[in-house]
Amino acid sequence: MKRKIIKLAEKTLVISLPTEWIELNSLEKGDEIELTYLDDKLLLSPLKSKQQLKTTNLDIKDLSERVLRWTISALHKQGFDEINIFNYTEEQVKIIEDLITNLFIGFIIKEKTNLKLIVGQIAITDASEFEATLRRAFRQIVNMVNELQTSLKTNNTASLTKQLELEHENNKLTNFCERLLNKTLKEKEKGHFWYIIAWNLEKIADIFKYIAQEYKIAPKLNQEQVKIISEINQYVESYYTFFYNFSFNKLIELDEQKKKLLLNLRQEMISDNKDTIILMHHLSNLLTSISDLSSSTIALRARTDSLQKQ
Image 1 (cartoon, rainbow, N blue to C red):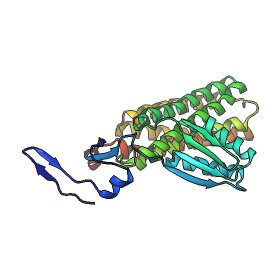
Image 2 (image 1 turned 90 degrees about the vertical axis):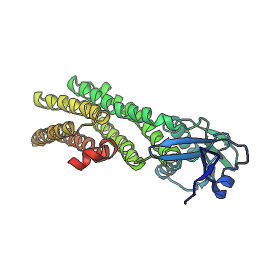
Image 3 (image 1 turned 60 degrees about the horizontal axis):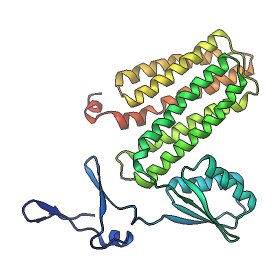
Image 4 (image 1 turned 180 degrees about the horizontal axis):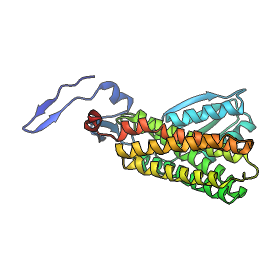
């Protein structure tokens, strides 16, 4: 959609606003709108008091627990402010309550009748929260590696189960990041790369969950395996630092570290010990998944002139 700039008086430049957008947001003469700079773009949006709720209807009759969780979570991530749910059972209500408590930030059950359940947002979604929330989610991965090293080094099963709590918290943070991107940052340049980072941080946290679920008793490790886990811990910490302080030289160094660690892990898989093989496999997936963030990180962090020189 194109608009021609009109000059008023000596210095004032104006453009007309599309009628469809005006009507969609119920704007009238004298209303104020917000202007947001996004690199070389200018984003216009109605003030929050004028913004209309984004709502949807959902019939959950006969949906299994897994499908129900996926569906409600998908609608939340899409940015809906209210979800009107029909044909539900009390068991399904418990599942929805669990999602709200453990996954959805700022959501409650607003209304419940025999015919309809309304799940909705009570806190205003603020785009400015994205960067801080994503950093917390990334830092959570670093904490999970630290906890894993401690639990395996000390053969502490209780500490190992803490990974499940940390994974739940990570899910909350990454889910909120995805919602923010879908709801308020659609015009953010390279927003799809940010979404890939958030999505993958959630998948990386799952690896720690799988390890915690696998072992009722923390596996006993030999000296070489303890050393490898310590090096993996250092690698993840270094990658976190690299993500927020981008450097091609650092990326090359990290890639070399990953290759050496993967080689060491594969050597440890040549074992008759089932616990060792499974653990080394999970740790290999962890390294690969962290490294897979690199392409999106380059797209987000590297300057165009730097890319052209490579």
